[in-house]
Image (spheres, rainbow, N blue to C red):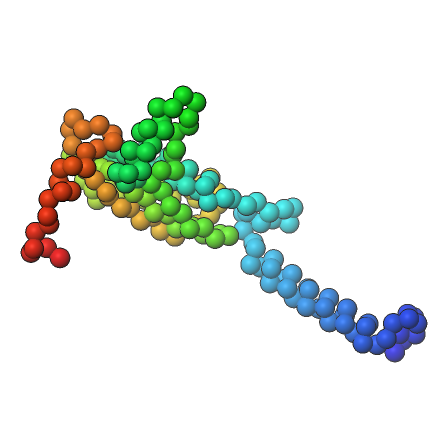
Length: 177
């Protein structure tokens, strides 16, 4: 009652309400601070990173791996080949990369074409190592997984757009499932 005596215009329910909301606010603040800790959330401010940033970093890191001939599916590669010929257009380094990103973690999927003669297993492992290192060092996000989808093999003499008229038109064997 001493508080209502100091504030004559306020009822006891009004003074009790701010006290309970400030208690809730401090509890929420503690939970929020705990949840938002890490290199991107500091007492001096927060850093947010868009998915496109992670896509570009992953795309560049993937292209650096020996044996990666191209990225994306055939349709996307054909579209990119046309747009790359337009004067003033920029190369789309995030082609063939999709990202799911949270506040502290990310998962990345890349679609690639492997050059003939390279081990798909070794190329995939190289991509995972390079993408994880690049994205984690640049962003501070934890990379949970890097999934690699090999969409084609570039044969000697084929251009980077590839030729989808060959083996894709053949019917798969009945003995394979």
